[in-house]
Amino acid sequence: MTREETSKYTDLMPDGTARQFTFDMEPKSVITRPSGGDTLAGAGRYEITGIAWSGRGTIARVEITVDGGATWVPAELQTPVLPRAHTRFQWPWTWDGREAMIASRCTDDTGYTQPPLADLIKVRGVNSQYHNNGIQVWKVAADGKITNGNRA
Amino acid sequence: MATARNVIAALMCAAAVVGSPAVVFAQSPTFGVGHAPKPEELKAIDIEVTPDGKGLIHGSGTAAAGKEVYTRRCETCHGPTGQEGPQDVLAGGQGSLTTSRPQKTVGSYWPYATTLWDYINRAMPFDHPSTMMPDEVYATTAYVLFLNGIVGEHDVLNETTLPQIKMPNRDGFTSDPRPDVGASPKKRSQHQ
Image 1 (cartoon, chains in turn yellow, green):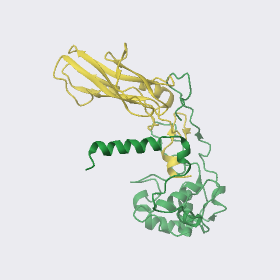
Image 2: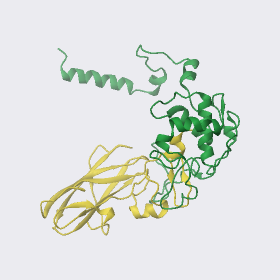
Image 3: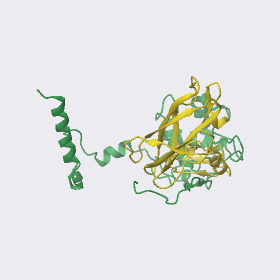
């Protein structure tokens, strides 16, 4: 057995054990625009868009939040939606110019819904890097600057 | 003149043929190049080593002999005792896996001694991989295990004794339990 199969591509858990042969890519999505590093010009209409994918099947739905996860609305999926393929989504957003926490979360056809990063960390700790499929939050500041909301 | 539309039409016909029942695939096209590898050709490039020692090449070495090889060819990247780096830390780290700064070394993390032999044999030293003789590989393996307190200085490692070593973290690995987070009524879809 190779170094990669044992010491490198294994996922170390908080109790010191490590998961081996973890090949599944669980559902993940990320908003690619607007996203970290972007600056919005001011209040107004913006299209939120990004990609979602699942190594276990087909993306069934993607939801968007602009209030840090308090409420979610369905995004539109761009066809064709194919198994184990990137699936683009979009949703029209009217920004009121106040601080906002925007994020996407996807569900695949197995019924699995992408979890918040904190839920993953609770179970897996912070030393298993290869399967972080947690929800990615972007923080939109009142001046329009966008930063990593997972660190906010 | 072959118009773009004609070319596309021809490609679509080809796709339709390829896409017809699975029996079409029973005999793969050969494209007129290459040949099926002969067993001896596969054997010549097969360097896989399994935890039970299958694939190990005949040879032997001790940590005492390996110290010279290590000093000459490994120390620059891995440090005098295997703990200094600057590249991968090879020794130490025991008890660190449950801390906020886990050190995944050969001694603290690797489950099989044969993996160390395999990796040195195929990939080390970094600037001249796969150039070490079998005895040098056994000796260097022995020295790295010695730096971790797993073998004695004069223990002889060969294709029989190396797989018998039980690494400290041998039982530290589990199979994949996911989905462990995220609601999932069905475990898998039909797309496997």
